[in-house]
Length: 230
Image (cartoon, rainbow, N blue to C red; front, side, top):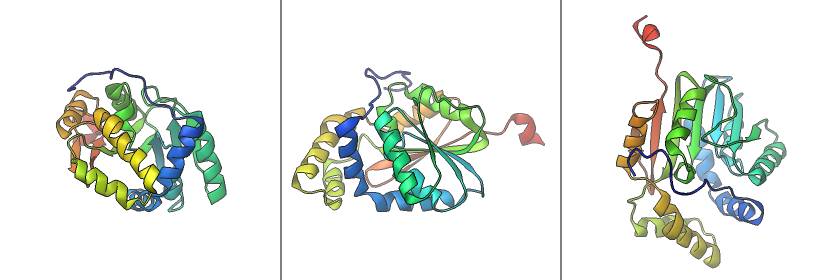
């Protein structure tokens, strides 16, 4: 896949018991969510509007909400995750708005957010180019989008090492490794494919940094030419 606008399957919507399993599994990674929230908060002004696309159980949005007076919204295709995330935010004593919607048709207004973040979900979007363009649409001029996801050409040894560090227990560890092998790696992008998608999108380009088993893609909604000159 290079600049294809659609993948040959519908986006994943985890519901019911599958959503519960995912929430329990990713809870083991809570420290990573908190670390990422701290990194994102470094560049955020007070009162910044933040959108998380596909927040799942809401761990990252809630971690970020604890760090400052930000206005945070999460959009997820799963009704189960919307309920879980809303209840989690309430238990943790923070205000985060979680709403139902698709990444390729974000139900929010234009030019509204300072930051968009999407972690471990972009590879599952059935319309990746449209999702990027929707992120561009709802960002303010000068705003940025950060996508963090699995890299397709990562080694199997690195995946095994990553999962083993999560201490999921024998059965959950095996299930997670098989999910990586038979589903997630097949849907993931190479660096070159993400660069191609970024160039084809309304962002026109992207910057990519590799990580342990994935990559971080940064996209900027540029200021209008007249404002750049001024």
